[in-house]
Structures are given as structure tokens and as C-alpha cells.
Amino acid sequence: MTLVDGTEVAISLKNSRHDLDYENILKSLKVEMEYWIRHGVKYKIIFSSEVNSMLAENIYRVTRYFDINDVFDATSAMKHLIATKKFPMNKDELSQRLNFSAMAEANLTSSDVNKMIVDHSDDFGTFPGSGLS
Image 1 (spheres, rainbow, N blue to C red):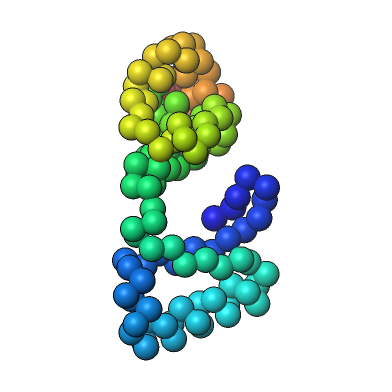
Image 2 (image 1 turned 180 degrees about the vertical axis):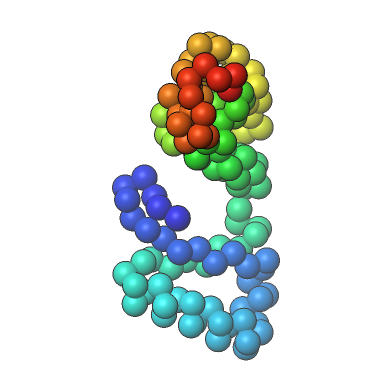
């Protein structure tokens, strides 16, 4: 993952700290850590109990729309804007249950969404005004 400051971090997610009690898992983590360190990437182990599940879910829900080609309506446009940091949200905001449809309704017009789609219609192999809206 790339942090806001541009730093790259490799993250290994484990169920619990008890996973570290198993020699084969520990060996695997050491190899993984060595790989990332040799490539100049910070390495971190995170345990499920330490993860804010709502934050993780929201990040998953918006990053699926990082690619503008996946935008097809106002809700997906809102998710795209959040994923690409064109609609900035802080960690506290992303840690709450989000209603992306309501956010889109409050912050986007249909012409905003149509413009996003039409501006990238070349990516779909179509031309502006061909019915993608």
C-alpha cells in the first residue's frame, strides 16, 4: 500500500498473535519481511483484532472504483472520487458506516456524473453521446 506521503508499506495480515507461535508461519513471515526490506519497502504485520472493520470495509468498497472505467452511476462516481482522493475523507470519517448514495446525491449532479463517464467514453471504445449515462 502507498501512504499519503508516498511511502510504500507491505502489510501482512494475520488472525491473531497466536499465529506467531507456529514455526512455519514465523519462517514464512521472516522470508516475506526480508523480501520487502531488500526492495526498500517497509514491512508491517497487522492482526485482525487491531483492524477497524468498518474502515477496512469502506476502503474495500471505494477502491473497487479506483478505475474511472468502473464508474457507471452517481454512487460509483462518488466511490471513485473518494478512492482517487478527489473527495477527501479522513480516517475518522471513513471509520463510520457510509451511505455512498446519499453522499452522491448531496455532492454530485447528474451532469457531473455524465461528464465523468463521457470524458472517459474513449476507454469503453465508444464515442460521446452513445448512451453511456
